Image (cartoon, rainbow, N blue to C red):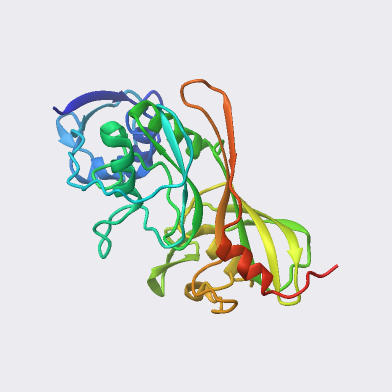
Length: 305
């Protein structure tokens, strides 16, 4: 059954998508944009255009569509479960496993595995193809990923992702040597204007992106890094490292070379910190570096002093 809510603009001048995104029922600009595109946001009975600027006292009627039933098939794919309770599950995703179904990957995904493991308890907020998924990691990036088992947990974790209190720490192998021991890349990311299949640092239709990095070990031609995401844009670490002139080892999409037995990015999501949505207690999880990552490190030569 559809659910209708009223959202009032207490002050004028906001973009309509920004106002909607602040609602507990919507929470993101992308969700707001979908509602606007489908004509589900009205003012005085008329659909609101996505570029509308609010006036003080505007009352918008928002129709929230019913969560669609998923046609995904549960599949008994082995999972390395790092943490699980009645609200959340954290999995150490192996390299090569796609997170959710997409063109070319209709099944055999982490979502299919979670459906088999969790049954019908996954949150529906993620949408028809992404039940429970709070954030994503690339197919060839391994490591920790969190999913929500109910809508309360999903909303709380999504809010932490938005206000940057959900911390994600990665380790990577990058080409070249870094002059400093640590630093920050603060550069907006959007679709590459020259290649829509890639992301790029660009001012056009981009969103803010911040990556903090530190050197763990230096080698003659490579550097072992730890990266902490302040934002979570598509391919963020891969794009930011390439932007600095240090693409990730194996990441041929963004200028890295196939070497040391790697044909995809040397990137592992090693640490995850969040506030438990029910108890309010901090949860901090770490995983060991996978065999493929440690094998690549062993082929870099002796560490530099």
